[in-house]
Length: 369
Image (tube, rainbow, N blue to C red):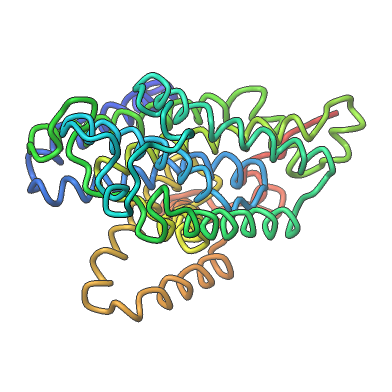
């Protein structure tokens, strides 16, 4: 076996290459503004990694990831606003002063602690997903019904935030000055945030890869393809789905928490139906069944939105929807699947002799009996 064809060498080589690009090439080649923009895209990629596990391997069309993204984001934003107020010697954040509030609401007070805020970022989205997942999967809700339910959840969450003036209402929370004591106006600290987002993305990909290629990953694919058969073998498909759903929510919450100091704002517009669909479109275009497809798709779609919306602000959303329809209708495996198909058809590749050989080029179904 050649060194380059060794699976372990290819995996570690891929991580090393990604680390060189993110920690070496990108900071050297991009301006501070562009680097901050890439950091924002990396936050979207972290969400996409979790969707790749839940949707690509588990078959769960998660249209409500904006909820978990928003929970993590608002938990971080509340802590940062309190910290900024304390630095100024004020009792409440600036937007509360404008509204005439003189005391922090009761549910704000625990977020003054950085430990509590970090715990909320890590645990609250996962706990919410756990409760929702138990209610949904134990009742065997799946397919289009699950997708509609998750989308309705995102819409309800955004409407709830708009009506809560104590957390900024429709304007959200913005104008953060510090991040755990670091001045956000300092370019060096902005680069630090980018490095944190890049490290979290690499760790997220490593985690999802471990799950995908473990026994649990095989069981998740089996539940996706033959749920009743898996149940007859003694496994509870609801528990298998629940793990993937909670992991996806956990990653989305972390991504939301990183999004806040990098971008400098979080509002209901960032957590509703439209952002949730944007996460899904990136995963679909990149290739939901692959490991790196969701990452590259999320970054590519976010970059295209940033680039083309400057010239076509009213037309980009239609182009995005059309692109999603084309990919799902004609290239369901995404760009990653298209690249693999072209690679198999390149000159010099051995064509399949018959239909049996042709099917061998596809991933083999998981055997559950």
